[in-house]
Image (tube, rainbow, N blue to C red; front, top):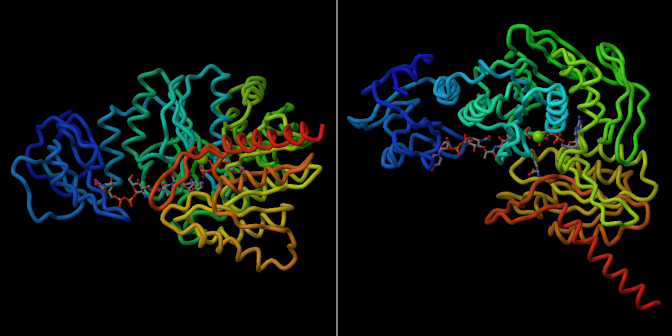
Length: 499
Ligand SMILES: CC(=O)N[C@H]1[C@@H](OP(=O)(O)OP(=O)(O)OC[C@H]2O[C@@H](n3ccc(=O)[nH]c3=O)[C@H](O)[C@@H]2O)O[C@H](CO)[C@@H](O)[C@@H]1O[C@H](C)C(=O)N[C@@H](C)C(=O)N[C@H](CCC(=O)O)C(=O)O
Ligand SMILES: Nc1ncnc2c1ncn2[C@@H]1O[C@H](COP(=O)(O)OP(=O)(O)OP(=O)(O)O)[C@@H](O)[C@H]1O
Ligand SMILES: N[C@H](CCC[C@H](N)C(=O)O)C(=O)O
Ligand SMILES: [Mg+2]
């Protein structure tokens, strides 16, 4: 595409050089530059993209988007100066990929917890209704039958448009995506119009980035100002911040919940270790047998039902689609090797998520609840003591371990978690500290007795563990399975000896 064509939807501050040049690729990372690329310089938190212009040119960039004056300009390079590179990137990407959103209905899900789960439930309903569906989110990105790896919950706008273009080429008509607060703040979804925006809930997380709950909420509420004409805001009425979300939107509103007055309400709720059934009333009326457990999944499924409803899908189809979902990887995933106690791997990495899961487990666990958890490094430190407090208040025995320590010292993170336990005078739940996550999981599984439940929190579907100096393969589910087999070997051995 010619540069002049590419920039027709933006208003640059200034351009220098030949606008007739052809561009074959757009990148925002110099390491990804290929021949005839346009390199977009982003001033980030760690480094400044403008520093890599020379490298980008050596690798084949022929045009550069900049936010500031440069000391040197090359004769044969085209420069496009803009006010905000991140913002501009979305518009350039949309033009470059031939406006894929004209042919896609976009459904965005935001909130602290439940985004991934809700997107899978919405996708199942859409597929049941016969729509070709794409998905963008934490675990992976999906285009029809094709699966692509995901490195973040919400990719940069450029990567999003590339995905959308591929979706359109494959005949996808509906894209369901998680929209993180980082994405909303860093303009990864700039200029995109959503047919539906879903609000799941808001609780403490990411305050390292957003600084206050108010700022965090403001970022989340941006999604509801980006609804297409006639678009819908799907809002959890039981969340104490739902009024702010409702106020922020100009779209149509549909509400769901268990407690408050709302358009789609769940009642007659019955929880079991493997699922939950309930009756939905209001704008839809039917019974649901969900294969995911927890009150929180009643909320996630109500959000999905609301989406189906506003898309005009009938109740029977909505119910059939939702009931087909057998589980979401790493979300209350049971690891079963025939043992007489339960082992669960769950992605809760916030105080609220952890509390919900532990309260759910309490409803049906006859024995003790053994909790294994840590907190991620380089993330909100405020949630560490809160998670420590919740784990020891609601669990019977806790092993505090490492999550992804990233650049931090694992023992320092554990100390932060411990502060919440020490401050909690009423808790007398025993806990131990074991920074080695593998050892922690083995120890939890070895200590379990009949009817107990071991819950391993924080990493869910993740298949790696990130340290300061290395990233190692690590999968909670595999390690738990190994620990169960190891325990079984020991037990068989004991039985043989005694018999
Ligand atoms: C806080 C945050 O989101 N940061 C993202 C941001 O980083 P940044 O602005 O600091 O970028 P930077 O590292 O300073 O680099 C500036 C620019 O120089 C470029 N560069 C850099 C080096 C080089 O050699 N050449 C080069 O061109 C970079 O590509 C970038 O364009 O832009 C980068 C480029 O896209 C992202 O990789 C980075 O995500 C980091 C890795 C991250 O961990 N993000 C997390 C917190 C995140 O986004 N999480 C949310 C989920 C949260 C949730 O809801 O739970 C998500 O949506 O995944
Ligand atoms: N609606 C909910 N309310 C509270 N906790 C929830 C809810 N749904 C799920 N959870 C808990 O949060 C964990 C993560 O769920 P899920 O992956 O669906 O959320 P997410 O918002 O996509 O998370 P992330 O921000 O990491 O992308 C689950 O394993 C579960 O423990
Ligand atoms: N999307 C979340 C995931 C956290 C998962 C947890 N395992 C961690 O590494 O902190 C984040 O980036 O904060
Ligand atoms: Mg997610």
